Length: 309
Image 1 (cartoon, rainbow, N blue to C red):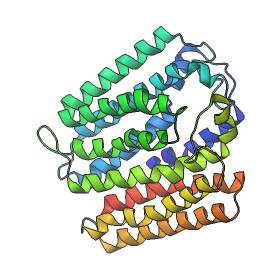
Image 2: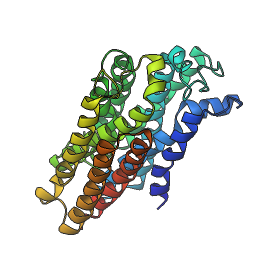
Image 3: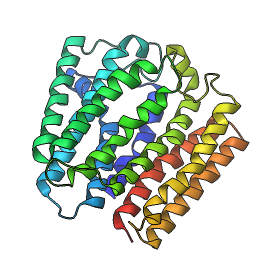
């Protein structure tokens, strides 16, 4: 239950960002904000749940390392992103009061903090789970900061690129549960694919109701370069529909039972219905409702897959 509450927390966070938080906070709070700790908590959730889903032997040491190391790696990626986008964040209402645009933190302070967290998280994953999970953690930082971040102003394809580091927590959790150097099983790959495709209806619905703010910084976050057009609307619906059969792949390959498949199917249909409502009545409010449904969808599906019932 605690994980579910943590996962739903970004709903309130998104609203706070849109309404803009006051930039009256201490240096310590600035470092905390730099981590985007609620988002980092989602990473820990996905990684730990996936660990429990695939692990044959549960290790408290690995779970702690996965949680702390995963948080540190994500915090580093989030921080590097904010350093790079410092001047752009000043332009948007939802980000202008972050630590970098308000000069609560200097570039040197932020880069040092992110470097320590990035190296520390990578080493923790490498040493206390296995080397491959550490490598994947480091790759997620590089992809997020050096590929996804600069592409946001160049092409809508950036969301596709960003979906890889966004789904890597699932893969890291699965790999952490394996022996030796670490390996990626087919089941782990399926879990990765589910989170990968989930990000499109989730993020595009968010981008739809934040589109005006994103335009101020020149970010191309909807699937069409035309922004809020029929192409974007169509793709949101199509990817929402595709997510249901993709999420049922673990059942198709006999990794989970029929009860889990039923829960996953109901979640998928719920998402599709809301996506269709958005397609039919395309408003900011309907986009927000789709975002809420997508946020709830993933933890419920991941917990269902973890039971394998």
